[in-house]
Length: 479
Image (tube, rainbow, N blue to C red; front, side):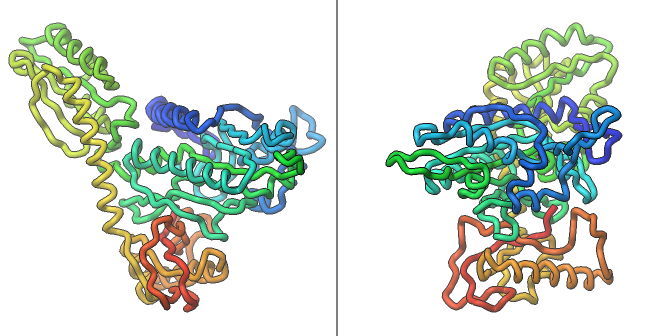
């Protein structure tokens, strides 16, 4: 999947993991084109003046910004930042390009790398100093159109996780404390990692309002000839997706890959003997491979003669290939093959007639099986709590906690819950403090205000403030 690099927090993506990213890109590009979004590319660098133009935005990213201060032996006249995100890089161009209502909507996306110099302990895929992502940036004539774009992008993120990665997510709004710096409203999809009992933010889509439009002078003449400011959105998905998928589905043997994201969906392993050589069995295996490829399956015939079948089984199980086909002398005689499913261990002997079509169906069943397994586990660890005394005990059971809340604008009570849950959790463990650099705090944080809200009976009180609750909010320990 990766190789380590000599700069802390940076990792090499090897072909196996990068192919997964390419499969996400291929799917995503088709979908955003349906929405009228075009791909483009903007520079990696941003001047200090541009980056600091939007006060709230730069304050949100300032601790993570990496700066270039030298060129060769000389110092630069002004430091240049390496992009932590591209709002301040792209929006001066939007100001030049958008002059009339006829120029709207403007919908652009770029696939790029960004650098955020994390001070917390880095973790491959989840928290790294450089990562790959896509970032969409759009401009609209009305807040309603911007809201539609925000939800369309978030729906694509839901589909990436649930339909490609077989990872269930909870879509919702971020609270004011957790929203994107400088934005008006942030939406998110939140996933759950069973092995750690923690939540993880999957992807976010933001309605930026007119804040950046005012800062970067993105003005245009509307249909009535009046000067107006564009409404904007931004939305991003990163290589974190791969890490989330690995943690949700992996087991003690290695990776367990959902078929739609697997670089190889089926591998054919020949079993040779003194009586039946690799040359004897290769024609049979090749015919199976041709049938699989004809059925649209990403498949490989592992005909390496320096490794025995047992080694190959272990190798491809570690890499998470969804189906292994074993072909021995008896299989050739009976015109069949043994099918082994990675995630369940199921073994079945199947005829090679129309095997490609049969395995295409089998792969879809595996995809659905992985999703349902993850969803069942997640649902079993999502609980409602209406009294504070039960809050931390449920967190200690590795649960996500849904509680009544007085509203996403109450940042003071949100901070209270973080502090109180940390104190109670540490006390229950006989500890006094935790490492400030840890990326896995015992404190609870708000994940989202879910779009799908359970019924909230009149008079229900907020779990922290005791004020009347206005919504349910989802909490958890998060990466």
